[in-house]
Image (tube, rainbow, N blue to C red; front, side, top):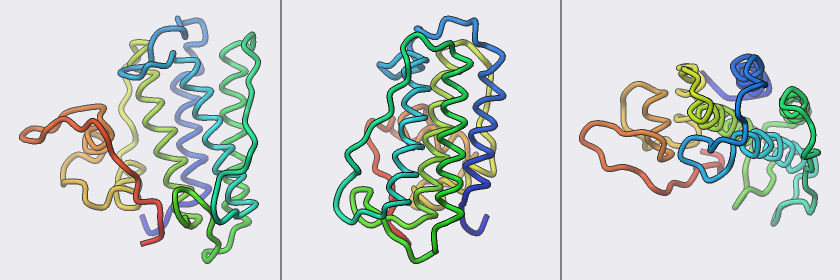
Length: 191
């Protein structure tokens, strides 16, 4: 995959909604995998991050995050929470489509559009994994998107099954012969 963009964000969000949508009646207050958040809080977090990335890319601040936040009604059904995730993903995809390759916005340093796309995909896939773990749903992240995320955000990750390596690289799994990861940092600045 040459560079990440809005189509990749759309695919990741579509995957999340398709996998989780049929399980709206499940116990979404359950803990999301190894996170301290519930499955519902984790889905809301995904929407928050996608919207924050879209805002950063649209405004292109150089030194901080924009001072806004996303609030999802506590009483909204899971179906509507997933609609918010979908909407925020589409906003990030639109911001990516409008951005020039040379545009930069702050994410702990200057980040280019492909970095924001990769972070949006990573947040969506990883937290979909967390939620599926919490709800007891069998699911494996798409290999090609995992490969693209690793290449863009974690270029020093070891070789292996891309989904397994991405999960290991973010403390969500183990790799034979490698220590368990407890902290990591995206390489979001342009390569």
